[in-house]
Length: 415
Image (cartoon, rainbow, N blue to C red; front, top):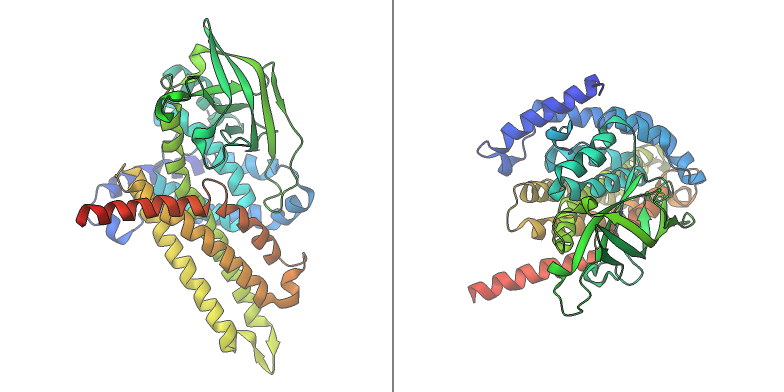
């Protein structure tokens, strides 16, 4: 596989970040290594040169941004945590969050495509056999292929345990039937990670009732629906996928039979910091756009940035960005190091950063005034794009459930 200069730079970032992660005081200050800073700058240049100028066109047409995705693949951004044993770079979660913050700055629709592509690969990284990894992960490095994560159903969104799709053992195969909704990358995916119930007993605990499978998109019985017309992130290809008597060979089982629910939960733990990073990037973009406009727009003989009402909005937006960034990095560190508090901090980060991205985008529209309501300016797109960040990957309400349970458990232990 051809390795570009950018890929070598990513490898250096991985090596340096691994050393930094073991250094005393690394967590306290979030000091980035020089290699991580260079990686961050590379992602920033990519976002500003390749995403920002084209995001509006893809938002308007709803087309999948193949041009952007292929260039992201060339830079190693689309599969950057694939293990070294598969030919990948195996970047840690904190380093990945630096990339996704910059991608989110450019367009969270593009970021969602890349994040879900990463999410679909995560179960294989966590629990896939060597054979499965070689068959499905290695090609992701060689070609700009796209994968999808098929878990959500009409009756099972945040409640993953409510998944009703069934996979029944049939000799050396499983027969899969069911339907998944709101599946990102659905219409362009080469393969799906699918969660299905393999234990028919309704009393069976979720931790033993579900199994993960890899399903090729071109298998007989796999059919995808029309592309959804969504409020925001319109370049993201979101559809329904239906599985009708799809025969899955045993070697395509991910992990142990009945162990799929745990794999999915671990995958979501690793995704929330990336959603937080994208939300932080969107918040920063909203601040930058609003700030630049406020420095140029004049009313009553002075820049609107010099009016206290606007200046305070900019101050609040800046605080939202900085706090979102800190919590994102803290959550990435906690999850990467498999600390017991990882889900607590990742839920805080995801909820806070998503909520603040919506607030910052709304304030940016307000600062732009009437122009902010117009599609000729970029901030109305930011507001539309931000909303889904409070919904997918576990709604803000679900994140508050996770946080509150942790708080109550802690209080109970000390009472």
